Amino acid sequence: MERAGDEALAAFTAQRELLRAAGYTVHEVPVMADFAEIVAQLFTMNRYEVARAHADWFARFGDLYRPETTAAIREGHTIGDTAYAAARERREVFRARLAADRAAAGVDLWIAPSATGPAPADLTTTGSSIMCLPWSNAGLPAVSLPAGRAANGLPLGLQLVGPPAADEELLTAAAGIERVLNAAPGVPPRGAGPTA
Image 1 (cartoon, rainbow, N blue to C red):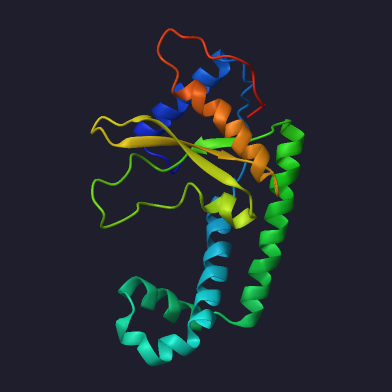
Image 2 (cartoon, rainbow, N blue to C red):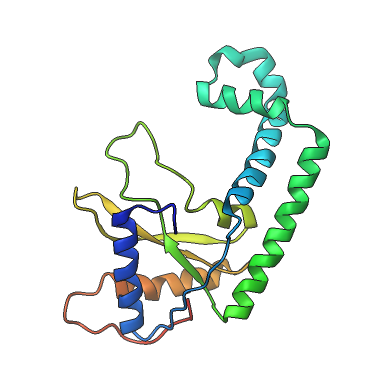
């Protein structure tokens, strides 16, 4: 949550209150105090894998790659097998810890802002992926719902994350949550849903 900007956090607070008012139980669960290490572990794996996946193509067509991809591949060349194996082990520990945290807190879904703020104003970037990074790293199914607009009119979102291999259950829950988020003012949403 510390990576989200003011507008994303304000929207997230409002979204949580809408869910509570609709009968959802929402818990605030402290997780990922070691977020910087989680990011480093993922980037180690990502750079290592991209360098190996592109080894042949990059050797032949490296001058055609985007500068960002070239930098990632070159960084991956500096990562050895031992560092990669250690990063894979840390990911497994993170997955297990996240599952244990979810079970201990009694939540069916994790919720978080979809992004650090509103969508980018142009197509030069897709914005920061930092808010979805840990969930993707853990291999968890996630969906982002439109959930309001920032002061500049660009959309904000709410991210829902389910347990492993629960894609269909996540989509079912998302449909109910989307109705709550998009309900007309003054119209009480129907039905309670999972614990988030």
